Length: 421
Image 1 (cartoon, rainbow, N blue to C red):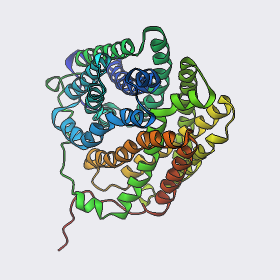
Image 2: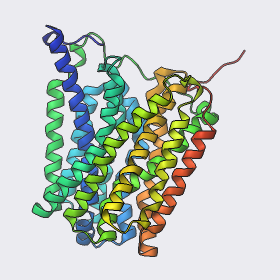
Image 3: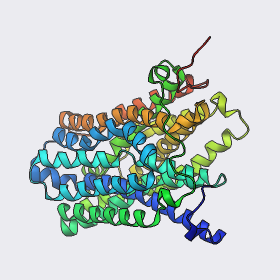
């Protein structure tokens, strides 16, 4: 545990208050991040109508924030290590919040897409920042719980974002909704700068784990590294498909209102949040007495992803309630599977100090496939007039990830070039 600023070192209670305030702010950051993403998904029918977008064009707009997000995952992680969480956190949330506000006044499709690309720039260090904050501030007995809570900010953000955005869009319109959500992010940035201690206030810098150069060729030659990357890509395909299109899918499939589609999306993600926590505990129990450095956690990852492939049964659901039940299980299994997969990476990576950079590289690949999900969905919808093929393809991709993680990662992963005599 790093030393705390003098104003917080008067007692254990003060220390605890600061730590849990920082935990809460970090989780709220994740909720705001994914809530802002959900806003476009909910508002997309109105946005598409105003700009005259076809289904394929809608897919490109929905994926546009991923273009910059994809390229900047690794560079933003390096920047975070060098500058620190206080300034990068405030700058990142400020940038994507301004992008939301700029989007609310865009009058052309290219201008609107530019604001989404800017949003991706701001959001690119989010996951690395959360991981760094929790690792630095959490005591050993709190780390697992706090990281789980941080990751649960994703479905919570998507759920609350869907509900809030649906109401705001219906009441004030999509442009005002974007401005309101952007203002919320700016308020978070001010609170973060006010509460999070500066480097000078800490006796130990939060950049203590300085960036260590990883050897990409060494990682690329590792079968075990690809055994982590492939399932993460496959799980992320499903994540970005649902994150981008789920409100529209529910609305068009079951002829729902905008408010109903937002509520049902929220129900799906909130239910998945609770179930994913239970599945995460189950997965940890399965490896509790095993040698994790031998890759035994891969069995849990493979099982969760195999269960998540039930997403392919969505076209068989003839009521929104059956669809929500299916989505809760599938989303929870994707969440538990990708979370356990990141833990598997930590198990197998030899150079633990390079975990952030290797995670950033892994997410670069997974977000690269994620870009394809909303775009391909738009083209499939335009070609077929329904979402059946969308879910069949997603189920197949998830199964590929399940098989890959079961067969491939079994040995240590080296992130640095090894020199043999």
